[in-house]
Image (tube, rainbow, N blue to C red; front, side, top):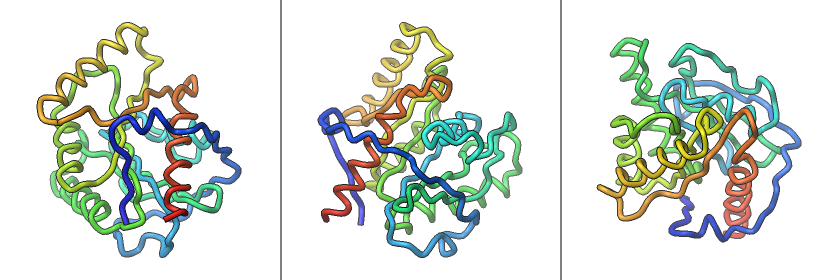
Length: 218
């Protein structure tokens, strides 16, 4: 089962303010078949190497080291499952576009990332992380196009917003919108975040909780 929201529905969510009571690591692996045998909804976080994924996950869960952070691109090389509040899974996926791994390793990563999105039915929504400091990157655009072509629901998370002045951040996001609209009918919904200031934390958790509630009703 897949769940998605379109248009401006994200702006119409009622505020739920999810409280993260428990967050625990479950398992790491490279095979989708070995992912947790569970019907709990799960949410995947993915982006280019060094986009700030681990820092974002730690910020969302209010745990300093739930996800291991590193300055070395490509450190996350496994599918990592975390159980949140005993009722949903947060999935930390390897980044795409590794700068320091071999071609054969890169192909292996791409293979199980693709398999994860195509086979993991309880994955209700993905969050594609984009570094807000940079111009639109071809690899990000290609990955989101791949997701869109397969009907995989996702939201964009612009990371590291604290590294830019407000006007620069706004300008960069507008550039991204313009680029996306060259091939998309409408700009995918997005949230702007900062792991340093907790910006966007409530918005992301509100999204997840709202989708969880819809999932339960269905």
